[in-house]
Length: 378
Length: 224
Image (tube, rainbow over all chains, first blue to last red; front, top):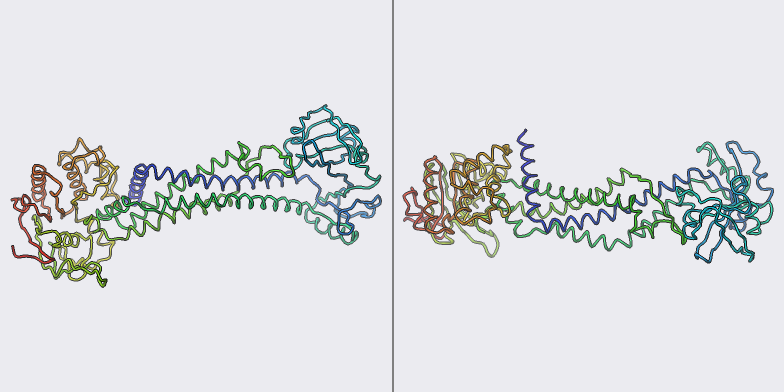
């Protein structure tokens, strides 16, 4: 083995022995530091997984949704509107959609009611989202009644509960037949809420949106990528809120870790003096302490990250769930598919390991450049 | 072997608390001999040894080691010389607590990159020589004063230096242990090593193991 390598092994050896000698300080440091990494990693893993989930779920939604506007507000699509669009090159399918919101006083929650073709949901039946089913205690073949906005009572039988895979977006969803939808909301015949257009070529989506805007000036095309971006912004915004709320705690832990890492005890200073007197160079002392910093920060990073991974992907991110997941009143329950972004890990690594190493090195460097003769005078 | 010419050393130079510890020392020290520096506290003995042992630089004057001027060398080279050529036995022993005697002894050799196995066998040989083999795995804080000093001596010898510097080596030892130390000292000269030590202790300075006594007072050499 080369002397250089042998020397590094000696330094690591000594570092490990040093860490063991100051157990209380180092364990305290490790715990505080692991906690910071855990909180930050949980947050980034969770929001990243949510974004991926949203992208995954929205992948099967229509590329363009056309809404009609009156006085700048969303209005119903009149009966002849779909024909007005005519034939557009690249559009595979255009379909009028019916959907609306319903407030359920039982749960104090808003549901999204959406009409589906008769071959999917028959008259008198509904399909419900997993969260809604759970909250209202519904299962297939149960019946449930809703009082419409006009005061009439409608009773439906649950034909199926929607797959939990899409729960992030279908938490509060109720699917019913077109006839039932129109009767329940007293929706005018021939009118629709909006129009969904399927476009095969993603490059064409913007051109088609531009054509729609010019041929139907009173309409507003909404692109899937825009919806996705909105979801991303919502998650970013929530991540920001959590970070703001946790900023105090993170800062407190960071200060604790910094203080513990950078405070050199008299005993440590004395040891540095001894090492220098017996023939260690300033560089050797700094290298040894760098190993120490690296070992602590890497261990804390790995422990924090693994704990965050388990917390997010196996324990459902219990700590952040209420803030980060779902909207309105119903919180979807689902297991996130583990997705990890290399850049995110690298960023987290840089912002946790790097400041720590700097915190350790500055005081060590100060102590290491002092004259070794001080030890003779102790 | 070591020549000092007009060595002066000031602390806090240029500040109101400026203090001159050495006022122009001229001295030649022979190889293979034991030289004791005698003098009261504050006479400059320790300061002089730190300069000879490359632990600090003189404010002015020259230090020659084996004919080479080392007083102006950068820290890195001084450290190299210190590691290879000087072994230190400090008054307070300055062992690192929490480590075993063996780990303390091999510490000065870490920067050399010598294989661990080689270091351990060298340390074991020293422990045998110093009759400390049975205590090599014990943590240093569990050792008696005499045992701690022998660990410090083994540590000073691990890199096989030509010069041993011992600062008040018997200050923390009783008479029996002090005599034991002097016996070890004789072993050093028999092995051809040069020993420089400071002491107030008559048991040391009047010992037959000491070849030369250099008196110091107020940062100057005295005639006795």
